[in-house]
Image 1: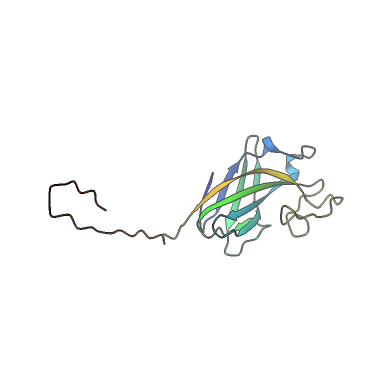
Image 2 (image 1 turned 90 degrees about the vertical axis):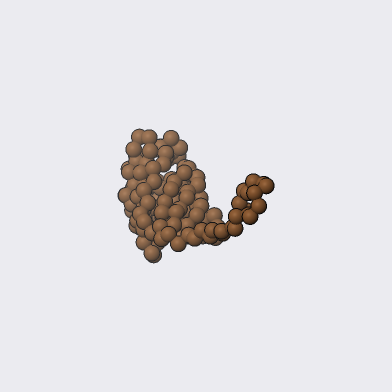
Length: 160
């Protein structure tokens, strides 16, 4: 499970190499498209991590907090706090990797020109899971009720 805090940057470490789909290209030709879905309001945020570092056993993904999310620059705003789902899609290039509009798919169903080597192609789902986003502002409130202690002593008082 990934844990994050609203209004802050996010670094996630996920296993992607064991589930790699397109093994015909070098790992430098691979990027990952994240789809974040909020469990409560079903809002969706897409983003490519920037930077993305693929190691042998894991991949490090860095996202930047911004009030105006940007899919291509790794800018995310995970609000509201609570549980989110994440899905990670492998995107591969045979030519130059360019993470920008028209060169990198914006969703998992976005199809760019599959014959153009400079356009990314979604290969498929690599991993998915749950993510908890905590509220950084401290606005969560807890309400306590005070109960009067009973005046008789012939029984045990358990509170409410």
